[in-house]
Image (cartoon, rainbow, N blue to C red; front, side):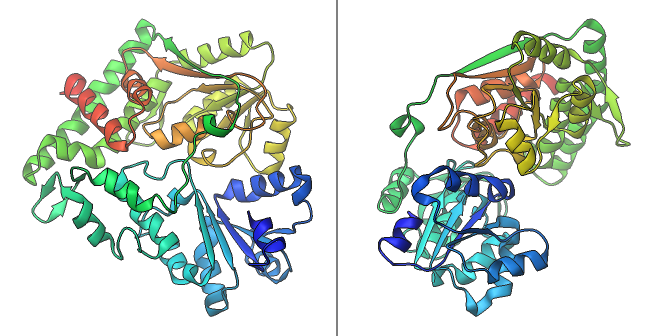
Length: 428
């Protein structure tokens, strides 16, 4: 696209790509180098120290790549000298908050660019409210309105609220279809199945049993630490005039679910920040998977720092996800086990050359992170059937998370509903 705009249509001089840090460091330049008809393009990374970024901007290039964390700096540095005729926002959903500094900065200059493109696999991961900030950067509010308030009043009704504070917005009847129609002329939506002949992807849920000692520790920590936390939030909710369902969507959801997921993984931080060990059942199961995989590389997703430490202690040859050198080594087949936090490996990274086995050591409530992380191996260039293993601790919150992810609810609300149900059934 950018090559055509510059060298076939002579419509642009310079293009800017904004991407997640790891994607900016590795993916764009790696992909450009793969294609013979694109090797003439000069790609410069505007990354690193301030001096390195300034030096990169002075180079004559076709495409400049910057990580999204430096967007605010770029806008402040160039100001009225904004010189990019085309802008590609790789992972547009990272600009879904109109309150974020990066969104406010980009809004100041984006309309000085003749062409603006947004790429994302999850445009509305938390619901249709996400769409307004993203689409505004593409069309200046032409389709969904000039302000978020106007967008909300047109397409949404307030749900749970206290006074003038609205905690939830619900689509009006028929609003989803009207929004889709408004965006149909500038949005192209395709699934991999529409244009790629990819190998099969198999999902496998592996039950992990806790022994009697681990179950006793799990129940003890839940009784001594989790229940008091829930009751504390309930009292606060009553004092503030909120019902239980409204309260659980707030801080309690993050705190309680985080504690429970840690416990299911085998350890949890106590009130003093110390790690309280519960079990090694998931580590034992991962060892079995590694033994039966006949030396094939395994991509392991974890959530917490104590998960990482325990994984590294159990599997000394495992490597934590890092920069270009780690990604290259993985894709060359030199890393037997790659340990990734899904938030840092969820968008745009090409890891398909290094293996075809995924293990979710720790599950996530985020449907967006879950889907994006799985796509690191199941993408163009993959030659083997991809296997996605989920280690699910029996009779723990893992089972609720797995059920919600399997249902493929399109919004985060579905996952929060599952959490609320779990708290009501198990903890009250």
